Amino acid sequence: MDSHRHRDADEEALQAALFESVQPDYLAEILEAESQRGEAPRAQLQDTAAVADNGSNGATGTDLSDDGDAGAVQSDADADEDLAAQVDHLLQLSDESDVDEEEDANLHHVFLNFAEYLIIDILRYLDEDSIGNALCSCKRLHHVARADELFETLCRRIFPVQCPKVAVAAAADRFALRKFRTWFDMFYERPRVRYNGFYWLKISYYKKPELNMWTDITPGTILQVIYYRYFSFQRDGTVLYGMLFKPPHEVTSVLRAMDKGVYVGRYHVERDEVFVSVPTSHNVVEFRLRISKKGRGKNVKLILAEHYSFSEPDRTGWVNYYDTAEEEFQYYRSWNL
Image: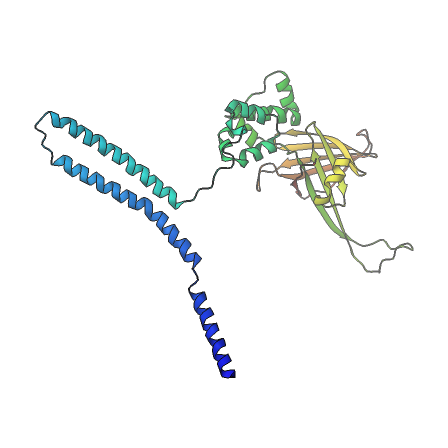
């Protein structure tokens, strides 16, 4: 009795295995459908080519002695031209069938249907970084990426604020290209400081702790001091300066709220150098920074060339010069500033 049960169980397992083996192979069906879809245009192309060959052979065997046959020859030539056009069309279809192109999501967007001058006028209201993001968002906007009137607006907006000499020339309507061929070249090549973020420098050193009766530090301990310097240049010619313990990813709210330790100063750009003057509650701190052309991106590094301070808030008294070692301020993008 048990042997019959085992035999029945084995037969059921065998039937289940056979049933699974005859299940459709969906991957194979998909591949077969793809191959058939690719062969369909080719088969149609071969049929059309065969019809074209037959038509040409018939035209060759026609007697051209009568004037009435000239119209037939002309009609055959027209048919050959139509067939050639069909062949070219089918070749294009066969090529397109091999590459599945994604549908352009912006094909029917209202903004892209505007005239080019309207798109440029709208983009003029954006800042330089937002314009760059907009132009990179859609390939159909690439035709306005080099519109000179757009970059003329950006140059007249940025450089008079950062450079006093340019401001004087712009006030007298004498701000021109000079050595640059286009306004895009001026925007791209002329040194400037960047907005929509800040430049930061990490400072780290070691020191011995000051031991006294109020400290609970083990003798012989070495302390590591880490703090950061920040410059956030604004579009009105001011700069936010801070010497803080917070790292770059945590300092945006502090700079925006101008908390304790953040001061407002002035800056200007001359050639490839930035001059910063920041009055504090007890002195005036000044910097001379060089705009670096190295690294990824333009104007993303400032090299500390000189650092000094006046002992009095009115820039009088003695001057303290601080050692510099060509430290590099890195640019950090923050849209919240």
